[in-house]
Image 1 (spheres, rainbow, N blue to C red):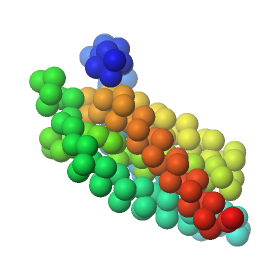
Image 2: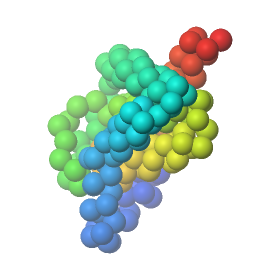
Image 3: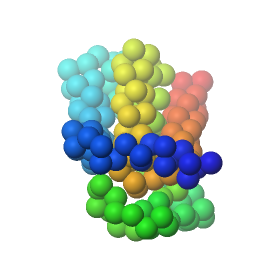
Length: 165
């Protein structure tokens, strides 16, 4: 199922140079969008905005650690290694599962969403686009980004509940 879903997304690779370049750009630089949004929240923002940015950074930091641990326990090679194709974005053949980009992107977005639903919803959309781009360029299977998204979201919710009971 995972392989079929990946193939259905990747069948568009090479059909549009603009789409390929856009997805590579998102897969590579997408995480910077999150830090730009957090900076725009924290620097000129009020108490809620700064709390949202702080919660987001804490959630992403914890998520990254948990994600690394899960990746060591459940190691899976990247699709371009297993399937033998050249990815659109050059990457070392490290662990594919779970996706750090998806996990941290969703942790950041979910944390902001919990305190600022409108901004958080926009960030959740950004995280989803980032996750799809990582599959499109050949660095992850859909389950890598799906698990990462769920993990990051759950960790953000748990941390928010622990801080604001």
